[in-house]
Structure formats: structure tokens, C-alpha cells
Length: 166
Image (cartoon, rainbow, N blue to C red; front, side):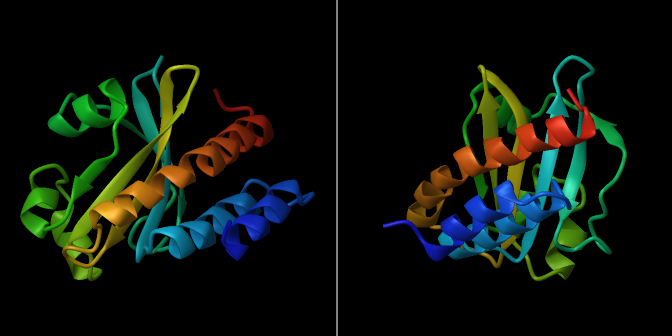
């Protein structure tokens, strides 16, 4: 049985106007229902230009939608981009090993993260980023995050259609 948030997401995706923001907000609600999240962001990736961009944030004061940033080869990128696997860190030390902004993350009450890759035609076109308190992302929650991949793909493809992005 699918959660009520899935039906809400489907309706939001079909709504005319206010796109892709309506779909992004519905994806956030679906994520809260399936996995749980304090800080929720969506990033898109341009593999040709080698840049990423945040296109949605539920905490825009701390993590605003912003311009592009270059992709760097790290343990994170090897796992998420090259191997197309979800990244999991469940304590602030593991977060700090990958993210330079770990102090800001911690100040928001977050010490764990999962980054879910969204894959279309063999290419990671973006990630759904979920952050919460330390130890929050149990194996069961990480497994549940797989259910976000198809709705995430719909959102990123909708973003391409609406904004003419690649």
C-alpha cells in the first residue's frame, strides 16, 4: 500500500502552473512520510559541464537555491556519481569527512545524511538530499529511500521541461 503522500505527489505533479515548485514540495512531503527529513534539498547535475546546482531547499535561509558549483572528485562522487549508489553518513564525523559545511549542517540539528542519486539513461542527473539527527538513517530508512527515485526522476525531468535545462 502506498502512503497518502504518494497520491498527493501524483496530484501535485499533474497540477498546471507553479511547476516545478509544486512537485518539489510534494516530493519533500513524500520524503518526510517515507524516510523522514529535517533538511531537504534537491540538486541537479550537468555531466557535460561538470557542475551541480541546488534547485530546491526546505531551509532556503541556510541552503538557498543558488548558482552552479563545480563537481569535485571525492569519495562521495565516486560512490554516488560513478557507482550510482546512495551515500549514507550517520554521524557528524562521517558528514564532516565529505561536506565542508558540516558546521552549518550540525547547527541545524542535523548529523546524518543520505544522498539518493536520480538516474536517467545511465546518468546521475541529480540527487535528493535528506538530513536528520545523528543515527537517524537506519538500514530500513535507507531501503525506503529507494522509493524516492522514480518520483525524484519525475521532478527532475519536469524541471528540465519547465526550465529548458539539460
